Amino acid sequence: MNKYEISVWEDYFVPASGSMESHYEERKLCVIGSNTMTDGSRALEPNLVLNVNGTHTLTFKLYLSYIDTITGERIDNPFVKLLMNERKVKVYWDNGQEDVNDKWYDLVVKDISEDSDSNTVTYTCEDLFINELGKSGFELNFSDEANTGSWTRKIRIICFKRRKKLYTRLR
Image (cartoon, rainbow, N blue to C red; front, side, top):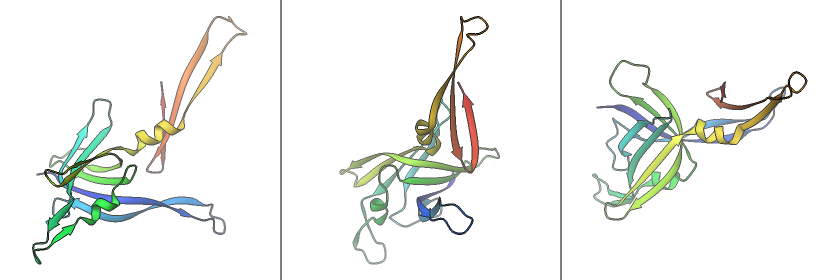
């Protein structure tokens, strides 16, 4: 069985103070599922997929309401109200094998589907860096008209920030 933890996060603004510039930081709101949780509100059927293009997709379900095993009362799932489109979700995934794929993934909720027959909501999350990548791409055109005047080189440079590192991809 895979070891995992799914948690909900939010970014918050930190104003400038002294020599420190204003910036955003993140904080964990709660853990909504893990392989050790037994509560009825936990995330069910988590599935982390590595797509052909190198991105990751996480799907999981939450019950809209559940029966409390102690009181026997039906309770609305408090995690459902926390999860909305574009909410930041982090997942730790350990597939049980010794490899480099056991790690934390930063994702955002991209799709929410409710199924009234099974009383569940299915969430689909995609890599956060792909979301940011679409916001920060730009194109540069280089031409060498002085030498030959016959060629123009077009380079697409895409930069994105992930875990305080800057990555650049040339296409």
